[in-house]
Length: 192
Image 1 (tube, rainbow, N blue to C red):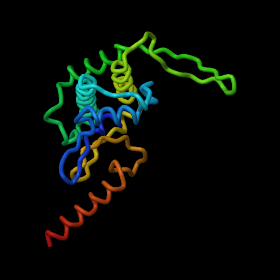
Image 2: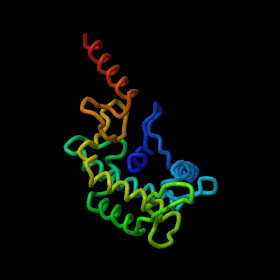
Image 3: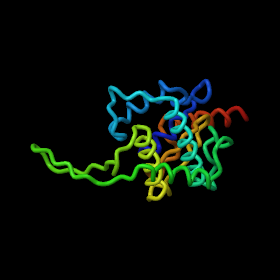
Image 4: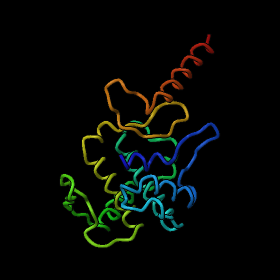
């Protein structure tokens, strides 16, 4: 899910928080990695500071909406104190998605089956297309059945959100589960 990829650009490492979008080079690499979703040419796309700043602002708005979606559970500890107010976040996500109206288009190659492509209704800049795709993905996740399964990973030092795929899933990854079990084991044995 693109919205989860966006909010996961803030990660915890042994040295603290890591922000994939901390600079233009990171935004360029991340944009190229998702070029097919954004309708970008992965070989020539280069982000600028304006796009990076706007995507980071949108990410914080999406993280604020995710924090509300997981409530009453606690939000991610990465940036809970830096998130915009809910109403402001909601407005930004909706306005960003509305900036580039999308329409279905039928693509039918001569040597293949027809397929559906979702494209901008009007020509739009790369920046607007990227941000609209991200906002649209967040809206789809939060308005769909996945919202009920959205969780904050409770593992020590983890700051990720994830969609719970099965009933017994507690963490975002096997590594986080192992880290949580090891921390619990250490606490139990330290007390004795």
